[in-house]
Length: 424
Image (tube, rainbow, N blue to C red; front, side):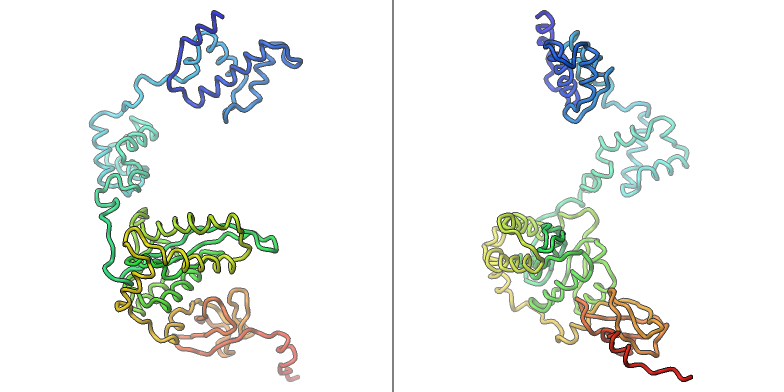
């Protein structure tokens, strides 16, 4: 009883998770010492048992549990909490001059890795690692919001954070685009599919110009929705996206240049600048994808079919709080600003995927694991293959910027019975 009153008099108002785990281990040992247990007859056995168990994610050795046990008996629960250093938060080893120099150099080179910065300072005769550890230097930078995470979040650049709210004055002036990871589902055959949603959003009206779920995140996927959006909604003045590989490829730049659309990219770590499309994705997650819990889907076709129904019947007709109109009404009101796309034939040619391939010796070319016929005169040469997305039965073969011919799928059975015999 004397020990219990002593323990209760020592309180710790802000214990750490580790202190709570230590107490759980100690209290378990104390309980086992109070009762008769067939496998625990001595303190050493109780300590061994405690060391073999998990305590809220922590594991302690036998000697550690014993130390915590006696510490608790003598000084109470507060003794199980690690004591803070008396100089915690203070800069150790670096002089004021070194500290000011470090902060000044870091502010002047925000994008430079800290290790490179320290190396440059060493070459100039200011080796900070002689006075302080690298961990200490990282802690100093973190306290002054000069670490990589703070810089990415715009803590040091007053112009890098979210700017004033903006909205384009007319439809199709800016389309924002991005990709979001969608729901995962199993097909009827038991195959697990991870979906991705590509979407294009008109900034003025918040209308989803085009969107579709795919099983990959390749350029072909974005090419599909961009072609659909241009055909259905007209040509945008600008497409605004991030620095992803899909959105920075040469083919996309070529398409935008040909249809008169400016391709603009957000700065790295500036997701807030695409806030409208990010908000659209959150709406999709909350209002559409949650519906799939009660009625699961089993194919991409089914997923896209239900998504398009939700877009037309729910999202496009609901009044948007930021505009006071539904996306469909607002887009229709600005129909006079829509710029029509080129003719269908020219547009198809622009959106054809282009890849470099070498014609095989047998006069065939491989595209996405499929064999196509090619002009025999080009055997052994590198050519540019152009094809529609998704890949069909016919491809175009270009050589030296000229159409050399078209090729269909190879029919090996036909070729086996139709070839010229060699002369003896």
